[in-house]
Length: 396
Image (cartoon, rainbow, N blue to C red; front, side):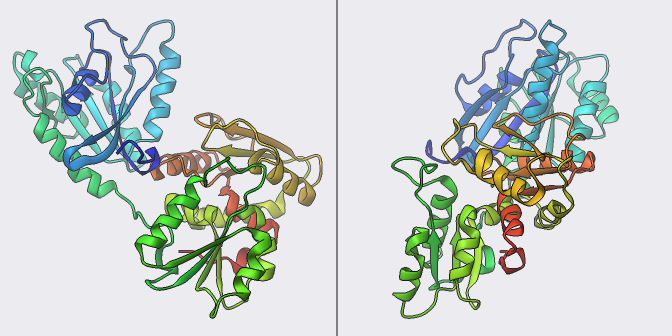
């Protein structure tokens, strides 16, 4: 369980005001002390993230967030952290307390509805309410959603909440398949995986591992090689492979050596289709043709690793772009949770494959780019277009 990547877990976020009972509720669901509980408002500061295995929910991530009404000196920063947490949630639990109105909760609800994130509305600390039914009626009247009455103290409603999360998990779950319809049982698949200076020492990167595992699960025959061994590998096969999957940085090299009748794609393209919007990314890649030396491009990486020699995001891709557009092209690079609140200064956003992100997180970033009228693509689509082979790439 602990080895399940976070990007493959269902992310469940708990949102609401200070002292609404978010942390207590998380502890009740987890069956252990995950979040600090206190009557002092603003106890939860940064978002608390806990990977768990919870019965029918399976592998999930519980996210406890700071109160949206935090008025402390650091309140604004904490609210920003809460909004960041909201972007990566597959399911949102909006926890309501005994307040005069539910304007803040309605704002939260509208944000999740706009991003099509499944929601559960909860009336927390119901054991402490004088008339929980009347309070529930007020919540339903103001939010348009009937709340579950839950008490972390006596655990009433906790089982019902978990059942609701399980149902919503099924609704929120996207296809787990990376290669999709590109292969069938018994197919041979060649995986081209450079092990250069930028590759991690002693292990394969996550997209390679996930793809390899799926091919084995689907009873395909994966054959792995490095780029310089590709021709020898193909020549040694009694019949051509059904598919070749390559690291995007050697897309052009591999395309020249793969026969026309063999399907070709990359790990990054597969992840883009699995986690994002392939049509939007395809259109975003074509925007590269309209860039000039006065343009500005944002490159976003999901992980926050230290820069490597010949790093794809920080070195190779910017170099490819400037070779096409000109040395004056401005390229900014951000990593991990960093992503500009204002994307309007940019002409294009190029995202990595996002193996460390959930689909919800990628789509949230895409929605932010689209709301700013900034096209977005990903490494695989961008490199394929730069190397003139985008039309040759097979999509799942």
